Length: 299
Image 1 (cartoon, rainbow, N blue to C red):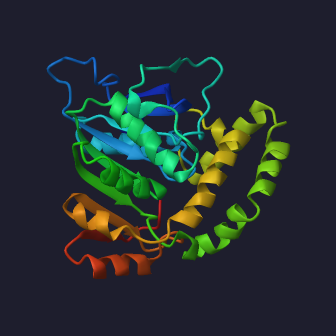
Image 2: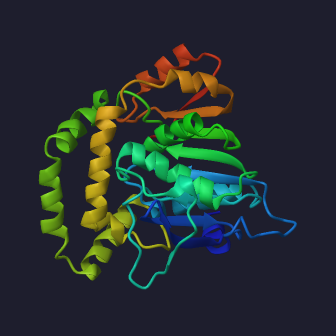
């Protein structure tokens, strides 16, 4: 199965300018331009994946390939990087579109609210209005998915799958108790350290370290993950994390209740960002909801 997914499923990489920021989009399947594709087999549905933090979309390639295969290659599966978490290689062309009023530069684009606006701008400018959508959020991508449902009722979202959802009490979680002082109090020390330690490294050394890391994690991707060791990207990831710790506190029960029929939640039995008690609280508050506890460890 793995070799079949690796060899037969096409994934197209694009770097676009979205809200004035370089953005990596990986498109699984043969459809790369949904606006100009007038063929009879143009899909009527797009599966749109919103990453966790860091938002390195290349790390999700095995997941989107498996997902594309699981829907019998009938629908495109796209995954988008977070704003500021991807820099295009020097030889890579950055595509631009004529921005509509919803896709202008966003204030605090690298922050949590800015990331929500970034995803909304992409959907409004790169996906036809009549195209049905399935949102798949991972970690903080689940928070962003809920915000999209709340802020853009005009989008034809028929389903939203929330994987290991960090949508409440992040600073109180086991990981959050460590991350909060690190990212909120010592963030600038992290910035300086990232630039001093990583900026001088040759690209070959960075590539070697990333290959070793991928081997340890048993991950494979044909796209570069050099952004994992790019100070600019890591600083933006840390900035986003600091806002997550401060702002993702109270669960948005109103939005969840309004869209409950479209939502499926997947919690992990071992997840230090949203522990099992968060799952139990969700089941208690929304007994009629599709809220599941996965037996496997967190992804």
